[in-house]
Length: 549
Image (cartoon, rainbow, N blue to C red; front, top):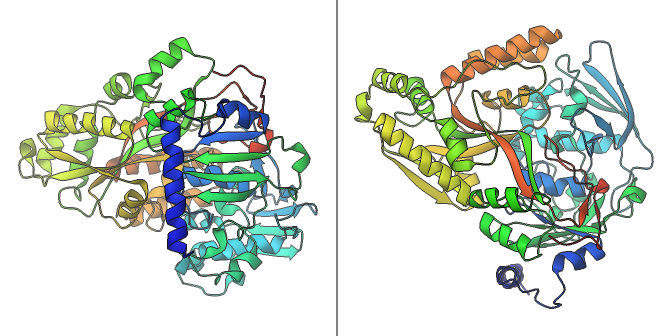
C-alpha cells in the first residue's frame, strides 16, 4: 500500500470514529468509553488542534507541547501542583556561578531513551545545534539566544558551533554559558526547546539540518519521556503507551494517553457528555453558566498565564501606521468583551504581560473611542474614510469567531472601519501567519516560563514567533539590556520600559488575559489547577470505580 493510500485509510478510519463519537455510539462495547479506558489506565485527552509536527525543534504550539510532555523530558520538570518551582528530571542536580551566567547540570546515569540508549550530555548539545541551525527555521530558536553566541550562530555570523555556550564536559555533565545573568534559568528549561533529541534517530532518517523527515513517525521516533508513541491517526488521535525505559517509570501510574484533536468546542463538550473524553481542552462559551451552576465538580476555571491578542501585519497599508494600530486598540471595549462575550472569568488586558510575580506592569490599554478616533484622524483616516479594508484571520473555533464578530462591530461602530472575517483550518492559518499572508489575525500566547520576558522578547526582530513584520532596533536594544541586567529591581524597570514601548508601537493588540475553562472527569486524579496549565503526566492516575459525570 502506498503512503498516500495508507494516509487516506487513516483519514477514513478517523472520520468513522469521529462520527461514532458524535452519535454517542461506542463503536463496539456499550460500556462507557471513559470507564473502560480508566480501568485500562488510559487517559483520554482533548487536545484542541491536530499537531503540526512531533519534532520539538520546529514546533511552536500548545497542542504539540501537550504531546511532547508525554514523549520527551528536559533537564528539569514542572511540579505537579505548584507553579513556584521545578524538580529534577534528566538532571539530578545543578549549580551556577555567582553571576548566574554559567550553569552546570549533572545528568542522572539512569536516564534512558525509549530504545534503551543512555541520555547523554551530548544529546542536548546536538539538539541545541539543530534548533539553532538557520536552515531548520525554528520559530523557537530565540529561546536559545540566551546561550553565548547562540544568536550569532543562528544568524550565520559564526559557523563553528563549538563557539556557542553549550558544552558536554563528559557524558553526564552539561555546562551552559549564557549571555548574561539568568537566575530564573531553571524555569526557562521546562520549555521543550531546551529538551534533548536522540541524535542517531535524527541522522538515520536525514541530516542534522533537515527540517522534515520520517523520524517522527510511529516506529521511528525515539523519546526519553514517561510515554512513547504507539500510533498517530491523522486528524483522529495520537496514542501513547508507558515507556518502560523511562528513569522514573515506577512512579508513572498511567498505562497510556490518547490525544484527540477536536477543533469544535461543541463537539468536544458533546464527547465529554457522551463519556468519550476524560479531559477537554475548552468549554463552549454558552455552556459555561450551566456547568458552573449544575456540575461544578467537573468544571474547572483557573487563572492562566496567557494573553489573547490580535497580531497586526505592520507591513500592510494603513496598518503600518502606529497611530492607526493604537486607534484599533483603544476602540475595543475589553470589559464588555469578557463580561458579555467570553464569560469565562477572563480579565480585560491592560498590557501584553498578565499579572506575574513582582512585575507591576504598566498603565496602558483602555477603552477610549474618542481618543481612538483622534488618533485615526492623525493617521490620515478621519472617520475611517479611506482606511484600507482588511480581514481578521481566525482558525476554526466557535469562540474565535464570536470574539472576532464582537471586535468587528466595535471597530465599525467607534471608528467607521469595515472589517471582514476570514476563517481557516489550523494548519493553513499557521502557514498564513508565518509568511505574513494576513492583515490582522487572532493569536494567544501562554507563558513559556513565569517571567515577563516570555511575553516581551516576542517582538524582537529576530524572534521567530514575532510574525508581525515589526522590527525596531530601539526595542531590540532595550530587550538586550534586560538580558544583561543582574539587578532584580533594575531589570523590572527595564521590562516596564519595554512593555511601554510595545504599547506605543502596538504591533499586536492585547484583548484579555486568559482564564482556563475545561472539564475533568471524576475518573481522573492528580490533575491539579495550575497557572501554567501544564500537568506532568506521571503524577496523573485513573480511578475506574469513580462515578462518571
